[in-house]
Each structure stands twice: as C-alpha cells, then as structure tokens.
Length: 151
Image (cartoon, rainbow, N blue to C red):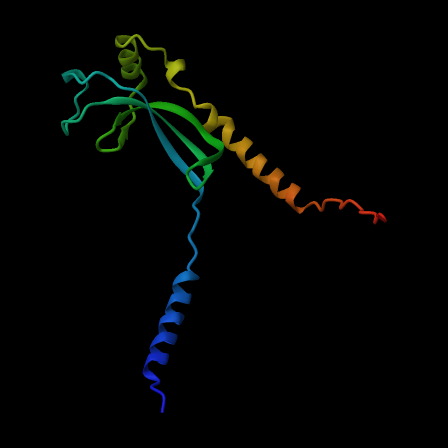
C-alpha cells in the first residue's frame, strides 16, 4: 500500500502557500503631510536645539497622493517651519523669529516657500498619462483586411 503521509504533507504545504500568495499589498492613498528641507542653517550655538541637534529650515504642506510618490493635488499651501533632521521633527516658529532668521542668512521667504514642479504639477501629468494609456488600451484597433492574391 502507498504511504499517504507525504501526500498529505505536500497538500498542506500547497494550501498554506495559496493563502500566503493571495494576500494583497495595500497601496496607500490619501492625505499626508510632507516635510521638505529647503535650507541648511549653520551649525552654531544660535541654532542649537535642547536635544543637541541643530535647526534647519523646511517647508510643510498637506497633499493628496498615491503611494507617497504620486502627488495629485496640494490641500494646504506650504509654510516655513524649523526642522530637526536627525529627530525628524518640525517646529512652528513665530513670524518675527522666522523673519529674523531669514534676515540673518540674507534669504527671501518667497524663494524658500515654494513647491517643486513635480509636487505641484508633475503628479497630475503622470496620472493623466496613465489614464490616457488605459483608455488607449481599451479602444479596439481596426484590423487591416488582408485580400488574398493569386500567385
């Protein structure tokens, strides 16, 4: 008689593999706050934080995106904040103090407080291209009629 133990073991292994393969990866879609470092302040005592790290400048904005790489639109316009890169934290700085920091570094607020082209428009362009390719793939193409010829 045939040994059934290896058959049961193989079938159990195949069933568990099927369950493992059927798990789908979730693609994150929705709102998120994006923090982008825009200027590296000098590492002096003036910009040293209580935790020993140094302050930099960053922009903070809220956007709607797909998979963290395709920003579709900006929900809240960017604002300048203080940024601790090592701790990955941001600090809201009052306008008077921010103006003093910008003046000491000879910076213009309008030059720093901008979003890159891809964040503002690039995600929309990529999404439109993807939709156009999907529509183009669905539209049936006309097949050329081949006429038989006698040789």
